[in-house]
Each structure stands twice: as structure tokens, then as C-alpha cells.
Length: 145
Image 1: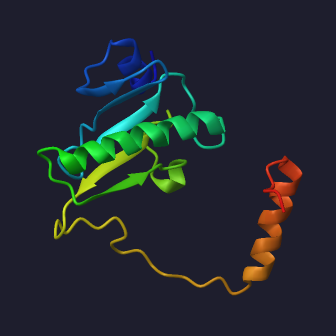
Image 2: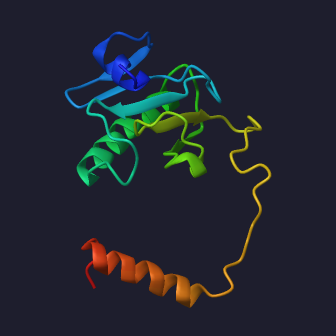
């Protein structure tokens, strides 16, 4: 099996599972940013946001919310959580089976997701908006007016 997350689903790769239901598996990240850093994956293989159906993404977020809430009320004493999906190689996706990171945070933990991030201004926001609206209209995913 070439996808390590599919192997986790199949039970052939080791994982510390946190939650499993009919459609998802959640397990501790092997390279955690913080204690309790959990990955939520769909059992069905989807590569990234362009591949995964909206219902799959919604299910991942719902599971992630449950884990985030558990991190707050448990002995992890989280004060908050970061939820993130890295979409594609350019966005630092390293395992190409879509996954949601749930990263418990504590006040003062000094973890910075945006360290070194350069703030850039779009010199032509109106044109950027037109480009995205046209793409949404062409794909049938445009939001209702």
C-alpha cells in the first residue's frame, strides 16, 4: 500500500488512534507541534481539497471540533486549537491523503505557525476578485447571491 494513511486505515501501519467512526480515523501526529497534535483523515482516499467532496471536508471538521473540545476539557488543558489543512505541495502538504491537523494550544506556548510569514498587499484586489468569481461561476460552485 503506497499511502501511509490508507495503511493506518487498514490497520497495517502503527498509529495511536484517538477516534474512529464509519468514515474517519483520528490519530496522534508522529511529529507533533504540541502535545495532543492529532490528524483527522477520511477512510476513503482523497488527495487534497480539489479531490475531496464537501461532505467529506465537513465530516473532517466535525471530528476535528470534537477533538479540539476534548483537548480543552482534558488533562491537556488546551486554551485553544489550530485546525489546518495543508492543500498541495506548495502549502507544505507532505502526505497526499487529505488530513486535518488539530493542534492544541496553550497561552504562552510560543508556537508560531506564521513565523517568517511576509505580509503582502494585493495591488489589484478588484481584478483578483473578478478572477475568483469567474472561476467559481465556471465551476458551478459560485455562492448564491
